[in-house]
Length: 120
Image 1 (cartoon, one colour):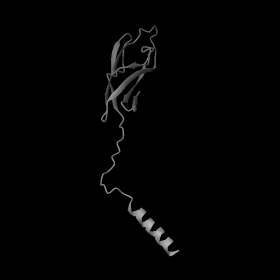
Image 2 (spheres, rainbow, N blue to C red):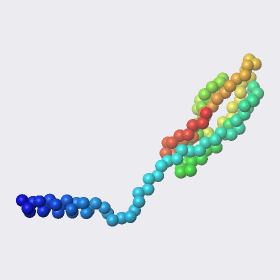
Image 3 (tube, one colour):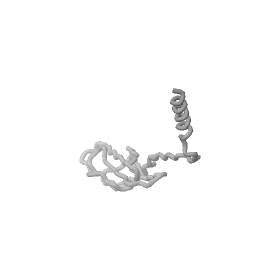
Image 4 (cartoon, rainbow, N blue to C red):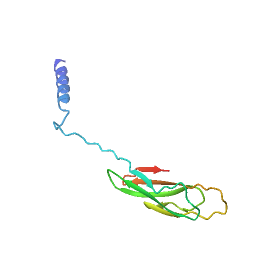
């Protein structure tokens, strides 16, 4: 019985002493940062029939931008489908009504790891 207890105790001591590799290396964990996105050429007063350019300035500090997609979210359709480009040019229709029209667009920039940033 004494031999069995001694063997068990020495095995536990051996196991607890063999846990590390002896290396001082530190694991580095990187996180993907969202792309930065800003829209320029935003105008509040636009005349019917006027052509305007909307530009998205995008940057990804830890990678590259894989897509910049514009979509129209409100107003008479001037952008029929999503457009993958850093800028778009639209022409506002000559509406028959004199009522003010509102148009809204969203732009989403996605980086090479699939992380998106959305601006409305």
